[in-house]
Length: 461
Image (tube, rainbow, N blue to C red; front, side, top):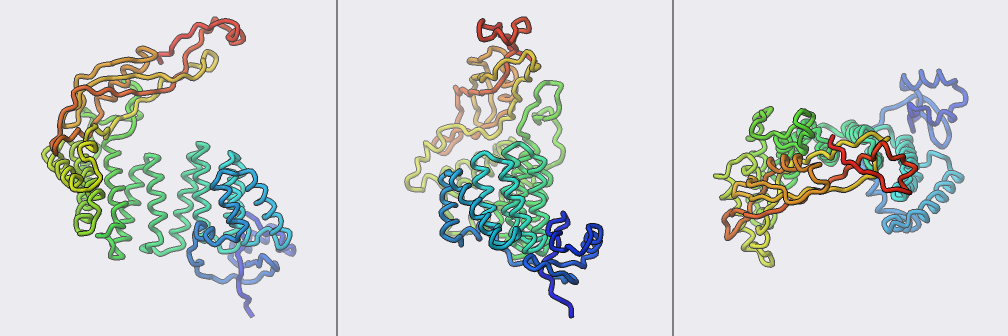
């Protein structure tokens, strides 16, 4: 009689002590053929059977039903009382392991909370170890494609991002999406949170083409479920427009005239593709969805109209931008408790290609990190362009003046709107702060820096 499968052995070799009768190479062969199943409690084994993925349940849903002790610990973590929470959670984990075994499903929540506390306390290696074990225990109990592991994987990604390991951040974000793709059908709406999560990471890491594909997939899923004309489609439409805007207006300016690793696409730079219509349609679609709802919040509608107006202004279509600014002004003027004149009294920076900080000198002559600034003054025309640009002040003088002025020439602003009409800003001052390392004179030994004032030379590299 064929016995019911309770759990697959993980491919990394965990649970191998449950099969003392098989050698390592026999276990690997059996695993590869899909013949072994293991009960975490009894270690029984037999022929594997396929089972459907478990019903979706995120770690946040699990945490909503915490027992009183874990609920108190969760509150401690929220209050940033990390060390006492870590102590309690480690004791809780030891108690569960002593009473049952190292793969008990009830370990998932305390391990996840332990990771949260360790991450908050700055123990990132410990947090990654706790999250990794929580994921493994979940996979042992619920299967390799359990959607319940996804929220824990996102926590891993957040820690990797915090420590600057963006390759591992990307790996964990993509793994979470892979799990959801395996667990659900192609047009299942349960995929949408994962689609948006990975798309947001791709957009943040400037992988705009992959982000755009994911936002487009979100639209396909919504349209398949007859929700393409609802509010649920707005994040995907906004994401599509944002990727086209980032393509045309990248966040960084070239560090030098010869460095083309980042390209600010000004009037002299070619556009890779004709991306204006697609972004325009996405933003128009958002406004149409909002206007179709008679009970729509006028502030939300006005903000969507302003996004579309800003889009036209960035592409120098003032014939379309100005009527939309006036329309948004009219919408907000009718809302109680909103100072519409104050709302439009200051220009809004829409695009500023950030100049890179000065290159650091070699370590042997590098001084302590410093903060500098450049203040520039200029006018802002009704079309959002900067003109009459000049340097007001800078420190250190001349180190970043040229780069900041170059960036500001490409800057674009939403204009001031007075009585519904865009207006010129005659005198505007922008302050750009940056970090730099001064060059310590090679003739001044570092050991003498405490006894004598070193000669400081600013690096102009």
